[in-house]
Amino acid sequence: MTAPRPDAVSRFTGFADAYDSARPRPPAEVAEVIAQWCGRPRPDVVDLGAGTGLSTVIWDGRAGSVTAIEPSADMRGILAGRIAALEADRAAAEDGGTPAGAATSFTVTTGTAEDTGLPDGSADIVAVSQAMHWFDPARALPEIARVLRPGGVAAAFDCDWPPCTDWETDAAYAAFEEQTRAVDVARELQPPRAEKSGHLGRMRASGLFRFATEIAVHSQQYGDGQRLVDVALSQGGVVALLKAGATEDEMGLTRLREVATRRIPEPRPFWWTYRIRMAVR
Picture (cartoon, rainbow, N blue to C red):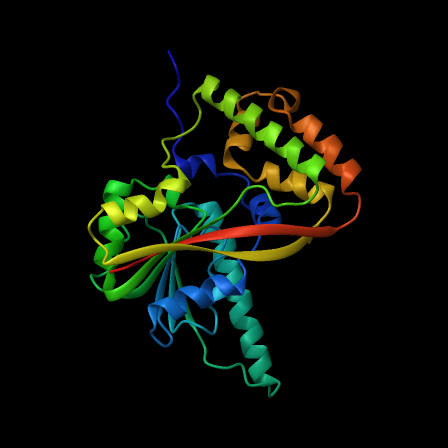
């Protein structure tokens, strides 16, 4: 008898620290363009599927309030610590006589995209970073629309995977992803997911939004070959396969590690492209 497939939360359980240290941080421009499109000063933001808070803190100083919703206790622990550190730094700056600007209030809570537990019309922006593909669109989109005020913006953003670094390394990563996907399918470990390329179409087809569009912004961050391997190891599917007994050779990770460490021995720019799908309520 085949074991039941893990859900998305369990798939990302047990490696929150590694996830947090390897994953890219969304650039400030992501928050800036969403806030501009919303057109409301110091909006109330919901960060849905907030993870470890990498996407939460980009709203500091731009939003009036941020409610970060994350179902994983592992991720939520790091998220709460990141917010506490941010608030401590702000308090220290103020004690030292440095104006910290308008403070953003943060709340961290559990919940899901399909059942946020938030009141009707309580947000100007519902932002979703690297998580919309794990949601049930038929239930999550109506929940997002319910939470938004009229004229509010739903924004789902993801970075293209992997970053652009070096032609041979990029080719090795593509081969690694193809092998990993084949092993994942064969072992039937992947939870149901909605393809990221369909986010905009599903927003438009839902009938819940007046207008929807997609743009791209770019981010430059630095890393070496080991950092790229760590990025690969931050993928929930890779961790699930390793836990299930798949080998690094079987997934192509051994080859990726060899190429990345040889081609990128020292830090160099990692070029990430972020695709932002925005829909107005």
